[in-house]
Every structure is written in C-alpha cells, then in structure tokens.
Length: 345
Image (cartoon, rainbow, N blue to C red; front, side, top):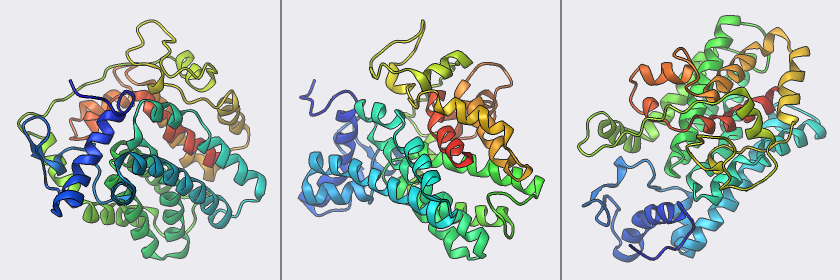
C-alpha cells in the first residue's frame, strides 16, 4: 500500500511518467530500466511508459504533477490546431463545417471520461487530424515529405504512450487505403497511389519508433511474465446508442446488467447528433465517399465487439497477430468512429 497522488489510474500513469523522468532529472542518466516495480524491467517493453515526448519535457520543466496537467492542455491545443488545419487549410471548408468538425470531434464525452479515470495516455489521439492532413497533402501534392511528417506525428503519439490511438489510426487508414484503391473514384483524396503514401507513412513511423515497438513486440510474443487480458465483451446496438446519447455524465455509472467496466470505458456523449449525422449522410453519399463509409461501418462493428463469431473484433483476435490481439475494451473504438464520421460529415 502506498499513498496515492491521483484518482483511479492517475496513480498508474503518473508513476510510469516519473519512472522515465527521475533518472533524467535526479541522476542525469538515460532511463533504460525500471527498478521500482515487479522486480524491475526494461522500460521500453511497457506500452504505458512515456518516453521522450511532450509529457516528459513538461514534467522535467514543471514537475511531474504539474507537467501531466499541462500536457493534457497541450494535447487539446494540438487537437484544435489540427482540426483547423485539416478542415480549413487542407480540405478548404468554410467556417461552419470547420466548427462542426471541431465541436463534434473535440467536445465529445470520450476523452473527459477517460481523463477522469486517469487514462491520460489516450489524450494524444487528438493528434489524429494532423496525421490525416499530412497524409492527404502527401497524396494531393505528390510530396512524400508530408508522408514522413504523418509518420513523425504517429511517433510523437507513441512516445506519449498513446499505444491504442496509434493502432486505431493505422488500422482505419489501412482499411481506407484498401477501399480507395479498389474503388478508384475521386473523393476526399485525389492524386497518385494512396497505398504508396500510406506505406511510406507507416514505414517512417516504424523506423522512427523502432526503439519502442520492437522490444514491445518481442515481449508480447513470448517474454517471460507477459500477461494477456483477453476481452470478449460485446455490445448491442441499443447499448452503442446509449454510449453516444447518455446524458448522466457519471463516469462511475453502471448502465446495463453485466457491464464489465464503469462508464468511463463506454461514454462518448454527442447527443443524438452522431446518429443523425451517420444515418442522415446516407442520403448524400457519392461513390467517392464509399471508402470513408466502409471505414465507418467497420469501426462501428468493432465498437459492437464480440457480438458474433464472424465479427471483425473476433477475427482480429483469431488471427493471433501480436499487439492486435491484445487490444481490449471494444467500446474504445467509438473515438476513431466519431472522428471518421466527423470527416464524412
């Protein structure tokens, strides 16, 4: 038993931030080993430990507690800037679509509920607009440096321990590229091969972040002491409706019988706007929009989780692909679903 410095998982996140910061600040050494828990282990094998990202820099400048709070503000600032850059500068939308995207995406209930629970490592998902914007610019301008920039943003996210966010973006991007290459119609992106740009972005990310994902992959595929927490939870459409429309705002609520986690793992309040947009857009979809629609449909099926043997969530786990099969809590997919729906809107 140790004194707590934060509610719920804030202790967990602050502990793993301090593990990286203390050797730099107090001992002037590179943080390579965690001697403070579980008998010690190499730092790079743990997906929850932050590395040389904005979290570490702010913690070094202002202290761990204050730095962690400032990091959340920074992530939201990057999110707003990225939303403006994507919608205004890259897609060329007028003011109202820009405001729609920003409010629909940034003011949903998903991240505040997770922050309540201490899941600060999810907040770098707000960098997603920059990843998409750089990807689109690389395709449209045939400038592959934008593709490298997209990979660099993913690397910053991983340095901030946004493991889930990075995997979500890569999966959604891969689905979009496959659909776009098959349909080959003008839509959100027009230009040379989207597959080439996607592979370059993913390759740049893998090279830049090799120091993180290679040790993690080796550990997950046979490291002694690795614990797998399979999650076979599934949701009905009524429960997914409730995730977006529930107005209680209580992060510790239990909304249905057999709910395995508290409400901070499910809530993503947007009111009925999400469903209005998702259903209403079906009357205005052009053929060039079909790749984004396919991504939305697959993400919605992933939110439903283990609802059938053939569900994408079950297929992804059955493939036994390291890291992918370790993803937990299917309701977390509602944030990339909301982001994709906002772009489609």
